[in-house]
Length: 73
Image (cartoon, rainbow, N blue to C red):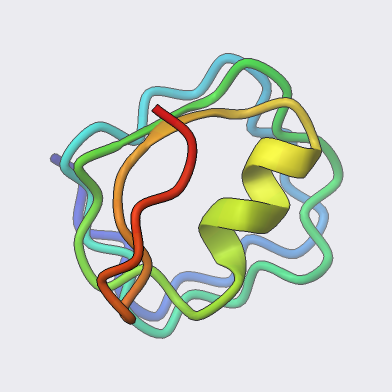
């Protein structure tokens, strides 16, 4: 997976992105432009709220938040 630690994704269009097994530690994501159909699968170090936000904006997720609580499968 990609190492996106610390990446600024503000304004990014992540439609159809494959984030499988990506390291998302400390990413700046709150201003992502679009994330429809992105694959957020088995990601590491997802910031709190990112996975749920992604699913609510059309991403496909099968991962866990830092809290360990599963999201959509």
